[in-house]
Image 1: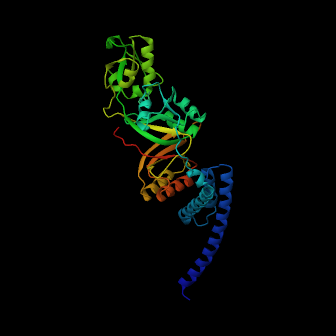
Image 2: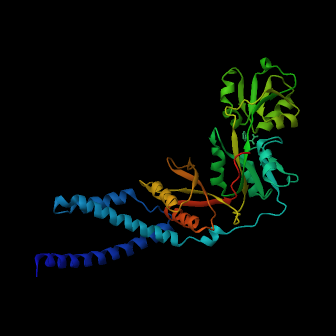
Image 3: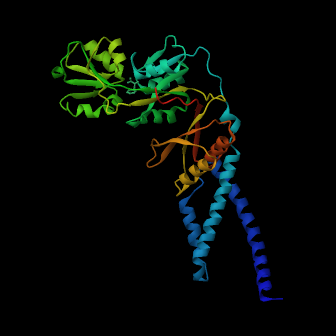
Length: 381
Ligand SMILES: O=C(O)C(=O)Cc1ccccc1
């Protein structure tokens, strides 16, 4: 028998032992996976992994093999984590996750702001028939509460603007209340400075608007630094305040429609920084509603604080040929330096590739929620 054959026999015997030990190790990992799932503990434990490496590297007799031993242990621990993730994913109730409710008949609708708000415009553009007696709410949160209390079935809110980005308060409320996105609508936004009829710009001292109104018109205000900018509920609440005050020193940033509704004049038109200023609005409902025509999915998730996890996850989207539209990150309330990630992508939850990507996302995230599967709106409104 040649030396090589002897060595190979020796290796075979060692591999046999290794495989049997590794199987035993995986079985223990499964038990740990169940324990962590029941206790809602994260799968990755940085300190524990550091200890495992340390105690095993300490006992190496041949120091030349340290690099390989380290690599071996890291791989073993990665595979154990995979097993733990499988344990967690196997318990996910997908029927529940994809349960879909039919759209409400004769729904009660609510929107943010006084009549004349951009949300009211978005509502009128989204629903085929103008909703009868819609309710309006003067804070974003009061609209969420109205859905929770079943005062309304759907609510219309802004979620992002083409020039100022995410409306973070709405993202945070989505996480807090756990409702679903059932539709979206884009509206072109033109902001105007409006006031009582006959007001001269020299008379203006105060400007009222929703914070978005100010953020979208910063360039215009560079030439009017003396004016006090006072954030108020909505652009149209601001218009109403000016009308009710009958004070020429007060003005508002709002739409032309709000000026007409509240009987005010335009003192300066199109003061928004960008001519193509557009806001995306969402139609919020209590439950997930989706049908085969839906072609956009929104999810929210958080990840283990482990290097490369986000990259590995997003890579699956590329592998499944899913087009990512947007990713937004928001700090987790009450947890320092932890983030919720909001992802929008093209597809329908009934499609195999989307379903596969969602399963992977769910499997690999600490927290996961499907926010909605709805019809993507056209952007040129
Ligand atoms: O205040 C409003 O009218 C709203 O609907 C919120 C808003 C404000 C500015 C731009 C887009 C939406």
